[in-house]
Length: 237
Image (cartoon, rainbow, N blue to C red):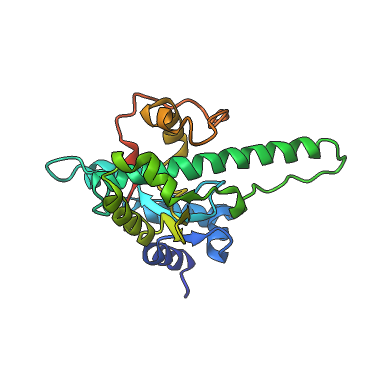
């Protein structure tokens, strides 16, 4: 007998991400009984489904309850299981802030505009959340190097780390430009990370590089008593 839940888990573990419009991915997101079985089986091995309604892909992550065992299992707490160096993780955070935060704001603005328009229609239907790739900004490598190169190890190191992040599916490199990869919108928990970036030191650096007005304004404030570092969600399974 075909075990569709096991098949989806195997695909997520081997392929690392699936588009939301994949048949099994859609079932995991829409079929309550199937989702409960999937969550139960992932939880049994310390994993959880990583998805966000604004993200175009789904993946798997280390479950919160297992993070201490995975990331704190050595002499020091590690930030990721991809063997990314500190400067690579810092670069990933910068790219997430430059690409995902503006994209999310555009998604929220479009959703509000469509909601306002639908109020004038007697039989308007709820619009699906837009995941149009055109909403995701593209970052020029030259601009990234000019603005952050000296803080991220210099040109040679940044170029090397961009290649690493591209191979892991976080970004796509095209002719000197950096676009969103399938895992970039899943690598950090948006609700935990967005406000910390905007209110922290990186927010000051980004102030003149990306629109900050109302970024994350619709999100609840984060709990700064949470001792778990945001970068701990970076994983490979």
